[in-house]
Length: 473
RNA sequence: GCUCGCUUGGUGUAGCCCGGCCAAUCAUAUCGGCCUUUCGAGCCGAUGACAGGGGUUCAAAUCCCCUAGCGAGCACCA
Image 1: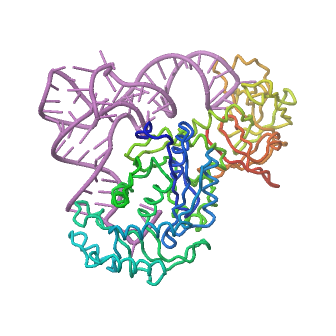
Image 2 (image 1 turned 90 degrees about the horizontal axis):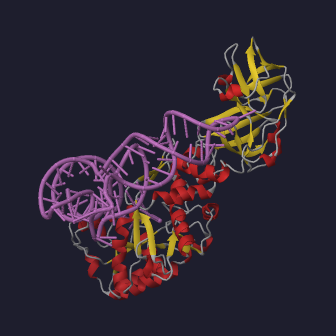
Image 3 (image 1 turned 45 degrees about the vertical axis):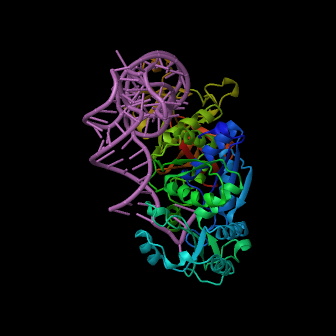
């Protein structure tokens, strides 16, 4: 953040549009702001920029879902507001701005004005007197126009060399009522650049972070700040984030469509690049925050490697995740000789957590790739060495040296009779298999490590099967 | 078309404002070794980058110019 030493308190805001649950890209803002707040005793506002009841229509559930996502990341905004509660404030500022000669009402249609603007020519409404503008604006506020009939424009510089800054729209009419009952009566809505500009000043925001798509916003808002004699906050623009490892596009509307079409089970489908999905997979918010913070705030577009998130998460959960065996597509083999049970450790780094006692029975399941060729040995982890003879595995009783010498692979296994059917949901689809009986003792939200496969979160124990979500290797 | 911005290894990042300490930092990734009854973790090692070209300077990743590539805005979306 630039010039932090010049402020007593760094005040930042995250300004989501509540038009759906968050995907991974959305959390970059709260992650970075939240992290900064914690490091430098900053202040965080969550302001819902819900000023478009029509094309980016707010989703009433999203307000809470977004706050929930922020909490999941580990942050707590100091204040939460909704722009749709603050219309009167925006109107007041608009009136003041009109008095200052900074705005005028305009009834040009979009195409007409666009043409004039691109030629650097003013429209006839620009020279209206203040009284007319004021009364027309009140008529806008009172809802006397229909959508498209009248807007309030900021008077900037109609010949500005950057056409994007010329006399932009501050308020427009929207016929569709806002979904929030409290705001449903309003028809005259501010545009983002106006609303956001007013609010950033009203809340004493010192540092704004936003995407490069809003590069021109500050330049537009600067005209308003100039009229009011305000000082513009410090600003950081950053590029877009892409996430590798996902087939599904990171776009609220795309995900929404895929869910509607049944391609995805919901917002928490493991294949969806959403916060709900990561959460269900047992990935900690902190891991996401760390990875996001590492991306920095460069203006170029960046790609977040999920492996980076996984590495962070592994650090966080490895120590407490108990070990379990899970065999995918098990091949059943009779087991001849050897002990009746195995006692592998609950966690190899923490002997004091004890052992898992796995009954062996007369046969076990191993993964197809782990079945050794006839006559060759494998070491059943936590149990001992066996040799593949004809169609069975025969206990040989050799010492661990055969593994140390590199001759024998160590593989995981489960008893054929007493194992639990498990469906492991992954980004690449569901895997069926069997886990050792001890899995029944874990509850929803527990994160375990399936040895030689990876970490997973226990989702539920159903009548037919236990469901787990795969986090990462 | 007009305007604004960006470009450091596979990925991300530090450095760039205020040129030398940068034969370029750290992380992740990949590969190899040690350790290990797992995947992981740990320890050790390796791989690998200043978009290209000019200029200024004793000295350029850093300043200037050009080229290329990428991105954004020019909405009564956020």
